[in-house]
Length: 180
Image (cartoon, rainbow, N blue to C red):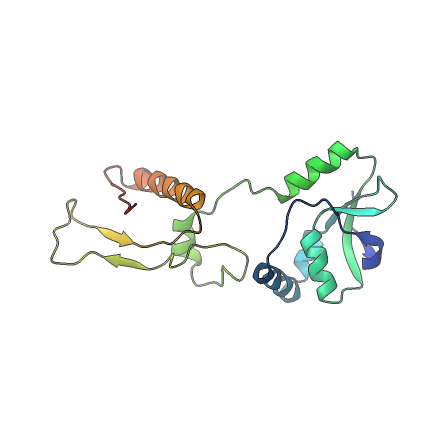
């Protein structure tokens, strides 16, 4: 498979795309594509020609950003001879999130960069760390209090698990307490 350059009008949005993008995130994607257009070449639109049209399997949001930016030509990889099932598999796998961010590494080595602008959904106040009051005696010699707000219980539960795993790995005697 090779990357082809196609007129933007030759490509069709997938009406049954299960992914969507919210206004603020879309604005960030448009800015990202504008600031670094070479990434579009590295992540071209993935299309199927099964129906006789070039229907987007992966890259519907990049396509919309390209339209917003007035692109006339877009990079495309065309999958031929796919079944409908094969198309659906590519749609899900291309949009899947298989990993998680190492928040410790991001905080220690990447926090000077505009990570939110680059599409990393960071918890609010993720870098604000306060030491406990000096009037209190920490049980293990040192104590840190962090306040992180989460959108929903699922996000909180995942973050809590990741923090516990990281703490136990680095500090086997660490105890994680939450206020809920």
